[in-house]
Image (cartoon, rainbow, N blue to C red; front, top):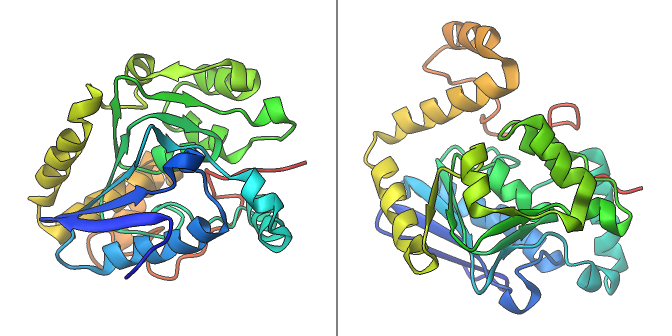
Length: 262
């Protein structure tokens, strides 16, 4: 399947989804937002793909919405605003109920809406030069979903610092590793090989077992330990029911990621 703003390929049992708008910092325009659901579903439906790596081409990982491009497309801007207000995003594997394990390989700056792809990944690697920031408050926007997603991954005080200081606060890769947002930091030239290595290791597991474990881990975060354990006991099979079932719909009250505009 051909894509305009993404590069999608397979390397053995690993599917790669790469943001491919390097001149725009890999920011999301209307075309990318339309292509992301197709790309995620294509890779998730491929039985030969047992792990997905998401990364960016060029110097940036992902810098959120391309407001300049969307401003030239009023209909797309209105639709994007509607979706973010409603928490009805379709950007990440988590948003779309992707069952295949996901590794985020953060190759550069990750800003604003780009944080969705980090907090929604199962495993996060970063280049030593990567940085993380949430500039919404500095440009007159109210960020809610990204900050909520961050609180699931790092201490609340660290998430609040990023959200409230905005563009004036950057989290480096080493600090992100200390806080637990990133599990491994490597030199920039080694990031792709490291991501492939980790993804191939994940891919060695039986696909059904890996998907069941992924579902159990995310369920535990959303429901808490006791409720998740009870849900697992009551399910017909190993963690068959839950947030990763096909056709699962998410509302704003359960959505950890997104943006709220004034």
